[in-house]
Image (tube, rainbow, N blue to C red; front, side, top):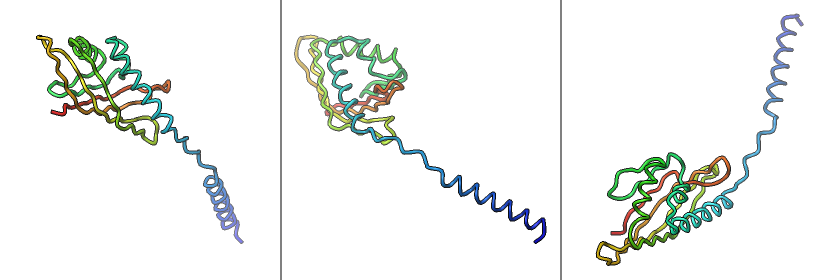
Length: 163
């Protein structure tokens, strides 16, 4: 066998061995499926948020949002960012006789564990200027985003009235 042919065969053998070794490397394990735990965490955080809103503590209430969150409410322009959320929640929490209740219907967590979405219903009771009670009910969708510390915050909040 010629020296050139032997060299070509040796290079081919080394390439094949390296390729086979690379293919045989174990693939990284898929991240663990934490959806059940994440769903429980979102539900618990949502329950805390509802209790916080009932205290009418604006700063604590908006702390459940990401810094760049968006609120889309019927009949109002989009509310984007913490400063605008603060103003919107100040107005809402200042409503006379305010009583807000929410009821989650479902919470789904993405397989990646980075996002979750919640669908639910709400009821808002207030008093008008004459002291007459008024009740609005509707539905909402929240998009939750997992934070670097493992906590969950709302990145998008939208709702609509039933009527």
